[in-house]
Structure formats: structure tokens, C-alpha cells
Length: 219
Length: 219
Image (cartoon, rainbow over all chains, first blue to last red; front, side, top):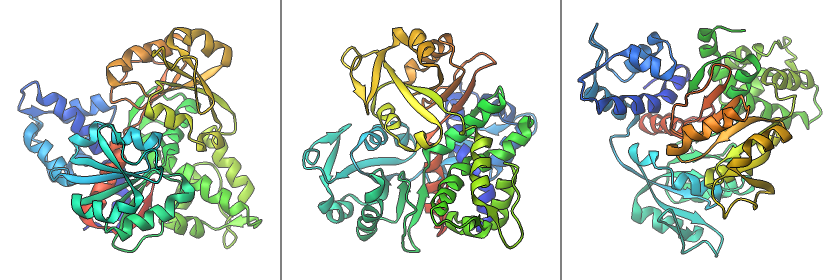
């Protein structure tokens, strides 16, 4: 288990893993058994040494001249991320962002299946969002248990963030993906990833200012 | 102007800048003239040395025992990001994600004003999204010129990503925030930031697997 300091250094590498998966899976369709680090680097506008460093975290090392074996590389990345085991997830808050995330196809490819949406609006409860049923917040504990929900994606308005989080924790869900601007208070055994949509905008802003002519993908 | 390699190292720091701003602005309300790096570090679950390193990029250095002067620190971060100059932006695609981003209040605090939404759906054209008018894609060149649009936020379905991007570039917009899964082909003078919603999920996934009991905010 890496220390928190090691974790910090790993974070940009982990962020890039989904992009690696996308590139390598697309390459897999060519039928070639090996993929070169340089090819991956070019596709993502990264330095080849960065790609080698990132991929080594998953425990796989490329062969000189040949590159990485495609199938084992995909498996190593998926295993590193835990995406080889399907997890049930729920979206809390059936607003625009909640609906967008519920309909986001990529999550399915990454082992996350959104099985329920929760809201407090009587007009939304009983309807579906992209085919996923919307339940009342009151039924969170029973539905979470029944469907084995492991992840809660929090998209409620910020004033309701902590109370929704408390309900999620009380329902036994231990992993929260927090799209609100609130720093949540959670017990020690609950993990929270806060998503700040402004952080990508900060990168774009610096590129605009410096006019670095590079297309960055999740760096 | 930093080299691309330096830029790579800066990227996680730039990603954290919006979180710094949020913390420091909230602290500003206390009326205290100085904020300590340790306080900021605690609020964001970062190491104090990381905070000092990040903030030094904006050109500001803390004073021993006192910390950072609050007002100049906010100004330095905003200036570094170019957020001290308001920019007009447009959202291309009036779907769920496009609507969510159009209504996202934080962008206003960061100097980005979404002034127009574009779509091809006749049922959406002429309506508003969170008070912002929805225009036909055909009127992109004229509206972009008239409103001085500098940034396009691309939220169309992936099959329409490149053609929408081409229309944006033809309309003279030089900065694209790309929420599609497509790697866009653009002229050298156009900057693109690709946003992959899966990248935050990758971080959550590793935390779930390793059960690191830390609440991470944009690391």
C-alpha cells in the first residue's frame, strides 16, 4: 500500500490510465499482438518516458523493440484500477449533471454500472433517467442493500451535500464520488474523491495564456 | 514560457489552483490579512511543502511565521490563470452535460461567462438553458463574432465531435474544452483541453482498492 506521499506522485499517472485504456483498446482491433510505448505517447501527446513510468505502476514492463503485449497490458491496467470487477453505483440527485453521468456510456466499459438514481422531487421519483429508475431518498438504505450499491455519485446542490452524504454513509455505501463544492465529513472507512469541474478549466486557461500549442489529454 | 516537459510537471499544480482559490476566498471573510500554508494544506489534505511549491508557481512566496498575504495571493492565482480577465464562452450541444455546465455557477467566479449555447435540434433552438439562449449551429460564425466568444465547450455526442470542432474553428474560436471522447484535429494556433470524466473515477477506484483513508480534492 503506497504512502500518502507516494500516492500524490501517482495521481497524475492514475488520471491518465483511462486514456491509456482507450488508446490500447482501439489498437487491439488491428490484431497486432504488441503496442509500442512511443505509439501510445504520440496518441496522447506525452513523452515516451512518461508512458513507460505510468504503465510500470500497473506491474507491466515493455520489451525492447517489441513494446507491450496488448492483451496483458489491458488486463494489468484494468486490474490495477479494479475495473475487472463490476461495481454497482448510484447517482444522488437527478438534475442535469446527474442525468448526464447516468447516461455516460464510458462508465459501463470501466466496470461501473449505475443501477439507481435518488432524488427528493416527487415529480422525478418513479420515472427513469436513461433507463435507470429514480427512487425516493427515503428508500436509499433498502435499495442500496438490495442492489449491492458500492459507489455513490453525489450531484446534489451544495447546500444538500453533507446531509445527502450522511444518508449515503448510513446506507452502508463506502465510496463517494463528490461533484459538489463541499468538503464532506465522513467516517475513516469511507473514501471520497472530489471532482472539481474548474480544474480542467484551469488547465485550459493556462494554455490559453501561454498558447502552448499542444492538445493535452488528461495530463 | 515553460517547455512541454515543465508543463507536464506543473499540470497537477494547475489542477489544484481552483481549490486553493476556494479555500483562500472563504478564509478572506475572516478578515485576517495572512493565511498560512499549513492551514491551506490541512483544508485540502495536502502536504504543506506541496502547497508552497504550487503557490510559488504564481510568483508569490509566503513569509516565515506569517504565511501569505490573502489579497495579493488571490490576485496572483487569478492572474496566473488569466481569470482576472472575463472571457465569453459558448457550450456546443444542449444535452444534459451541456445544460449542467451552462448552469455551473463556479465558472462565473472564474472569469468565464457562458453567453450562448448552440444545437442542431429545431426544438431547442430559440429556447434558453439556465437563461442562456440556444442558437442554431448555422449562426455560430456570426454570433461568435458579435459576442466575442473566446472559448467553446464541446459536449456533443462523439460522432459529431470533429465536425462541431471544425465549425468552432471556422468561427474563429481558438480555445476548446473538449468533453467528447474524440481526439480532435485542430490547427496549430488552437488549444484543446480534453476532459475525461473517467479520470476522476480512476482515482476513486484506486482509493477503493487500497482503502486509503484520505479525502482527496483534485490531486
